[in-house]
Image 1 (tube, rainbow, N blue to C red):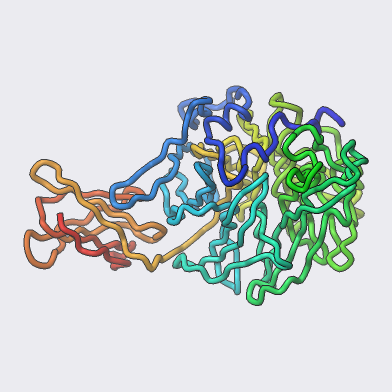
Image 2 (image 1 turned 180 degrees about the vertical axis):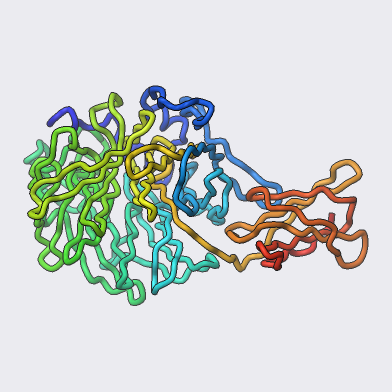
Length: 499
């Protein structure tokens, strides 16, 4: 085992157990490296420092709604791609949110459901909001995939086939109306090759392709059937509660965390073997390995990756991934990586890496290539997201206030079917009116209607100033608000309340 490939000090399982999550302050103290100066002016780049060990996420609350969300700070020094940020900040669970570059929320998942892999995908030719939701347990999850339309109505729920549950790591839609998912299954296995019991147990990681509309299983591939457990870099003693001795202590030899369509093959990322596998869809055969103990693809020493996440194949044939850390412990830094492969797919060249300010995400993490060529990197357990130019220059960063499994950026237009929310507070002899509309992307201003008796009438209009906007008016008895678009047309109206 090389220094680049040593086991991290704390496994991802320690972060996610039985649906209970570590707060950002604890996680940051465990995983955040000492950060060198960025080399940029402090006046232009002022992301919030990493939280201390005793810090808890600072939650933003509002008057017009009981929704809360971790506070986000950000800086911007260059041109970014259009769209909102999509994150799943970890408080008592992973909480989904869509936010503006400024950190202002656009949509906060309203049910407090445990959510990962929140993003915009395409289904039946239309942009949709997708995510995994369920219970996280033992470093993976049991749940379903959800597809929401632009009104935030659930239009499809995807379950795993063969009486299994969808794992939290991947929910990837294809242009054929199918979903690629990961599944974790406890199975007997011979662990003697790595010093464990011959009659041991592992988490066998499956990849399934599910027809979204019918639920039919089109593919069910098993890692245990095709990958020897001896390829793992995880030691049996690293997680004493999962040493493989019993079914309840199943060993996580593979830890699949990403599945990507690749023509007549699929690419699968196994974090614990440090390997990307190219899998034949029909036979299930491993066609090649990139990384790990048995790599078929040569790569320079400084381009070796370990404990990786979010492997993606692009139209130009390149492969991107999130390299969680370069060296053992916390003496290195994480990075996004973009590789080109030669025509025979036997040599990989690191075309660009993306690192900034010593960010070290020992678990989780993501890399997304944006339409304008920029690249956005989510640092996982280091609760930040950074956007880079294609050349690797950082132009934007948000400090998320809480760990996020992945982070991405997408254009998104939504028109909720719920009504805007309204609330009031007395301020001396006047009334302050608060308005918000969770998930509405097109609101540009708010019209306040009020009266001392009878039906409320317009008394003022104010430009939207964030997730929640307020306006001070003369004392009123009855109040309502209307959300207006850029042309001043009414998008939605609240109920009338007593002031």
